[in-house]
Length: 187
Image (cartoon, rainbow, N blue to C red; front, side, top):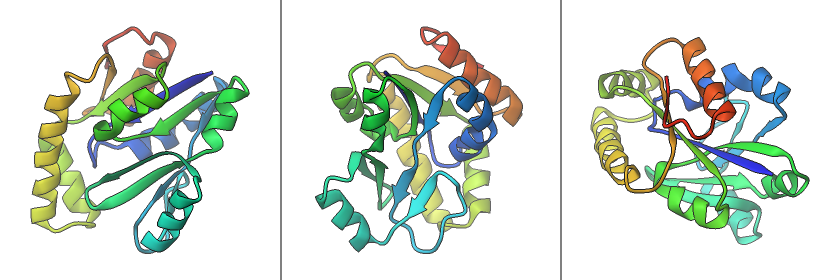
């Protein structure tokens, strides 16, 4: 039973990293957990399901989520299926939130935390290019990022994967963190 909790700021490239690492993770026996998000439209991310607020609230009330949090005006949930995988002795990787890390650790005390980090100018550029938020909302996300990074330093041990270089290097760093969980920085 091993739960890996990948976190990082919006725009760092967590979804891209997970897609690029999917085959290598599967070969190592990891399940990549899907994530539900309250967004309008249809997701083009293979590990993300977009739900209306009403559907999300109904699923949350029904106990469908093992992990559930709010960030940036959205609700996020990781389906309870991860508990089945973990109870079967399988490894699971979830795309989590830095702000929810302490609660996730309370629920799963042995989880391995990994933070994908990217330089602020790169985050700003990616968020603006993505086009989901206004320039003001992007700046609010970046401010939240700085606050969460400061709080994260006090949240306990976690491995850092640098996202400033190539995607291939980030995949290698993620796999190195998984192979040697005690490493503080895998870049």
